[in-house]
Image (cartoon, rainbow, N blue to C red; front, side):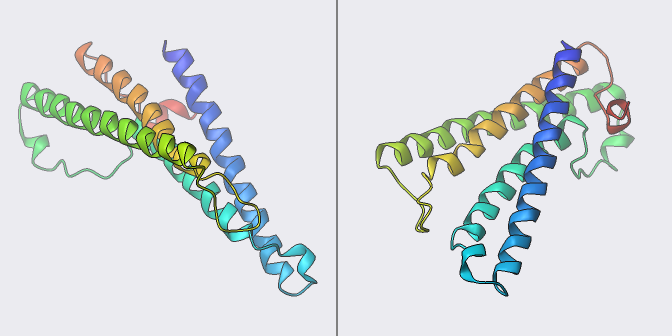
Length: 168
């Protein structure tokens, strides 16, 4: 199972990197388009860059979660015995799990309404907005998978995955 999650994590990393490269190239094209005829600067570049960066940030947040890289205040927690630390960690995972489930559910509600109402962007591209909105349930679904991995590791007595574990 760890190997499958490592592959998923690596694939998400490749997607995030590709999204950031695409956002950079589109931004450069938009800047260049200001100095060249309007053919190179369509009105939708800014919109697409925003959508791409939001997708990349939300997917990247799942990878940060897997590596325990989010900022956390643990100076007090480090002073407690291991059983209290384990209980606090499990409590934080339960809260994060509940929040993830809520954001998946509510995000999917927004996606289905956007599809039902055929909401589209205001640019000439007329992008269906559900493509933008679906980033929330997808990214939190991925975070849910990584939260479950961490919970299983904690209950089994294994230390959670860290960034140094994934650099090989």
